[in-house]
Image (cartoon, rainbow, N blue to C red; front, side, top):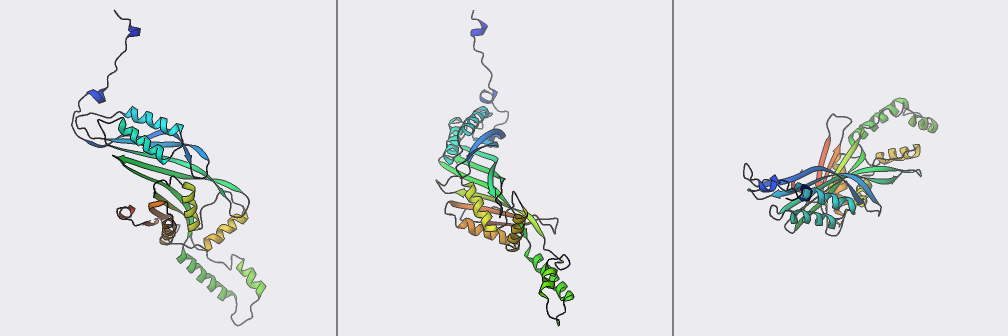
Length: 315
């Protein structure tokens, strides 16, 4: 009689051997919010480790099978993402591994990865620097040999309302006309002091923190160029939020806001023009949200590259 220590105990696998109570193919089955570290190069050559939330899914196209092998997906995610730098090729290989481990069950696989990437940003005028955390979302899918990839991020910036700026200038003009006699000679020193006083500048335009949410599809071989994407968009807008700020930086920021008055439509078109010029992107989707300080609602605009069958049909 064999010893119990030498006997391999067979554990039941209900997902494989049991019949489903109801038959039916399923679009996607898998796991959401898998916690795993990722290694990511944002384009500056510095590989950072970040805490990510991952979704891993395959379809279940066998109505007679009760479930998929979730542990296989989990172990592949853990091995692939925590031990090597995240690249387009590594994602492709990971999705291929999903399908290879589910050959009898699935012919489609998808993956989503969410994390934050810290990027060092300089101050506008002073020698200081600080960190900005940019959210990163990567989504990839594989159907047969068709591999689709997109990644996205957010750029936060300040937007000053052009209409409010015009109304404010009119009020300042009215105050000037009230304080200075049109028939009298203008006293340069008095006007200069007036312009520097709260009494003279009686109105200021409203501004608000605003967000540009970006999704892009890189061309084959382009890879993840997060910093390049962020730099393009922040340069186009002219008023990205800052990190370390001294008084000279705040003054430079005020000047940038005055020189970049924007409705949400203006901001969306600026970003659209900047991304149109990027040959490394096959398509892009822009959602601009101005979180109004005048209203309790937001002003929103969408833009895309406008390619056939692309993002343009999805707001």
